[in-house]
Length: 315
Image 1 (cartoon, one colour):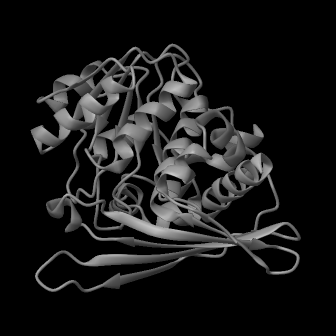
Image 2: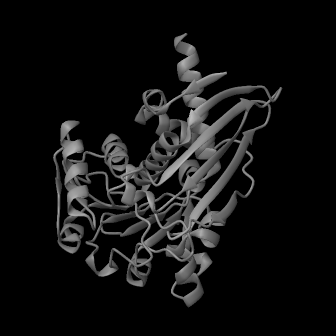
């Protein structure tokens, strides 16, 4: 059985190929049951979350990801998200690979956002603001830089030192990146805004979004969490990775639905419809678009298959 650690997983998932693999999987006959979602008590800390995400392509591959989210790890200097992906044969059930789940999750999440931005962000988008200083931040910058001509990368976080660190890491990779102290000022200039936090209160106001802006909401994966306000929902054309996931789990969608600010029929399309062409995505240069993702098991399966086939092809 193949075992891939964090670095090996990263090397096996280059951005262009990963984005393409996820697009192909959204157009496939992949079976994706509802994921298991369990809260786990952590004494004297925030509640942790255990996620179990199965998916399979009949006759080809099957897999399941186990992921834990421990918000308290941020204070320990540890990643909030960790896990493992188990890939097996869809014909025999033979176990094929164990893949680092944290790295797979970070890269496939950023790749899915970049895939959505291919249809929703302006083609000439040059400036991106990333809100959040966790593992996803740098991945989101790199993934979006693959599909849009980004020239300026801005990072905002509640912890200024953490934002400085992410910006420095981005500069070390050749990106024109800097940390910013004023989220509003940066958001008003940004062509693309990515939020990847565990916030329970809106970070981005819809009033800040300039004409043509694209808002990518990656964090806030529980109904009680939220990264955007009602004005953002009102002003934007709303898209999601999967309707079933977004309307049941994503606070940025669940809360506006409950209050009546958003109706289910207002959700323009899910990612599969963008990929298939059933929805054309951005309609004009001034339209404001919003993409909310909660993660889909088929994205993990696409990444796991790509990693497995990439590594085994080298042998």
